[in-house]
Length: 136
Image 1 (cartoon, rainbow, N blue to C red):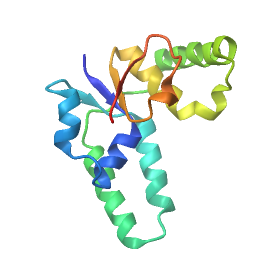
Image 2 (image 1 turned 180 degrees about the vertical axis):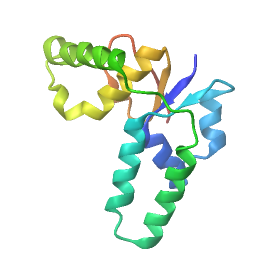
Image 3 (image 1 turned 60 degrees about the vertical axis):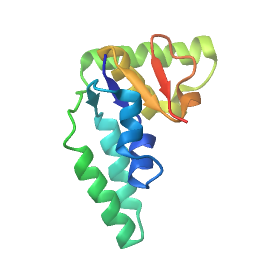
Image 4 (image 1 turned 90 degrees about the vertical axis):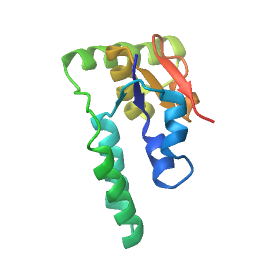
């Protein structure tokens, strides 16, 4: 098993709240994957940065992250996404619309049998088949 890492973890690394060794303490020697969803969220943060120094720091993080192996969003990912979005809406009673990015990450992790490393465990509660690894 490997890991898909939630965007919040990459942001924590960029901002110095976590080091590479902290992340490795959870992932060990298992492969680490990146999602296009994470790249989109990081790019959004770059584009929204008003301060040039912050923008450059975020851009440097984005470039480092873009070198990680990337999972593709394909038809199977879409099927898994639809299943878990319907489950969240029907069984849990929450709107999946407010959690779209998280559900794409969850769908990719489930599809590929990966653990999802996050500090926002609550964002992924109630998703069947998802192994969430919380970072404190």
